[in-house]
Length: 332
Length: 139
Image 1 (cartoon, rainbow over the protein chains, first blue to last red):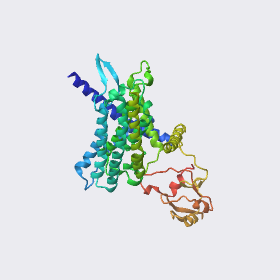
Image 2 (image 1 turned 90 degrees about the vertical axis):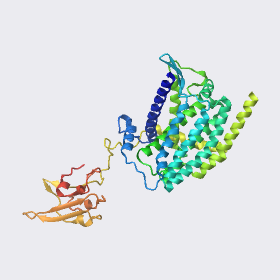
Image 3 (image 1 turned 60 degrees about the horizontal axis):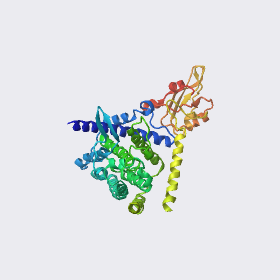
Image 4 (image 1 turned 120 degrees about the vertical axis):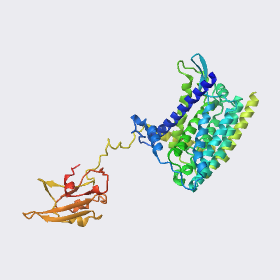
């Protein structure tokens, strides 16, 4: 019973925090991107535009929910949900910090410690792509369909490279559980041994979540929004939220796999600072990097994306994996 | 080598954009902060007054020169034989703000002010008549 209450509370808190962060990541993105482009971001709703996400949400809520004629209705309605739910579910296996003691009870700072967490993440991120694909397909719109096809092709190509990079991390930590992977990084972060894998993972991850410069499925200029072209109101909002939830979960996974989770490097400790702070700080910095990178890089052409995925990331990831294996065998 | 040659410009790009984080935004915060326009700015029209009387003598030159054909002038006379417009309408929505009316006017009676933000709820409200044009302040 205690376990049940604890779990439900944890789920509720994590869910709330995640949705809150999704809302405010949109604001952060708009503000930060604005400053990179030498303009102010949104600054009208509340002080510094802090109420902007609320205003956006309200606006989405009051918009007309259009279901166009000739769409595949059940799939059309289901697609945004399929896009959002896996993005949120990924957070279930992410360890946020060390255990803390609340009311004399040791509370682990993760919802569940799955022993196949990495596989779980790979699986869910694959399902996330279905949201875009089904949405584009069900819309019965040519732009939507092209966007959906691109989304599918991109996910397949980059998931391979992503999986290969993950293998080298798994070999080093000897476990698929994120908690164990983080625990293995108390002294040396994985990024110190695997800088190449880190870069590959970030690139493949960005492509996987369809973020700039890999936002081919929704290329505004040529596809007029791509897979979500026929969506309006809260259905569009769900896609939008899924995008940002994906971004947050990618940042959190990267932190767990490469940046030592809640640990500082070299076993440093700072008194009075809860460990979860370091985790949040790293996730925040990564998200800032994703926005910074969006403000810098133009979108790649479709064939360039495929080239990069198959001819560069894949071979480099395989070589990286082999080298890791050889070095590990030699060192013992 | 190829990888490094590809990565270096990307890093340069990142450095370039992050520099702009510390540049003051160049956008105007419009309602509070207005753009300072030039002295010769061609904005909303106004009819000049002198001692409570319009300078306009309704010669119709502005009407003739107007390329967008937005000015309508009708002439009438006072009892002492002075000519003045009984009607002077400007359809501001169709105006192209070329300033020819101002140039053509022999009495210097019509002027384009520096007022550039005017808005109304309907199109009809943009059709300004003589008295409305006379009331517009010099901006």
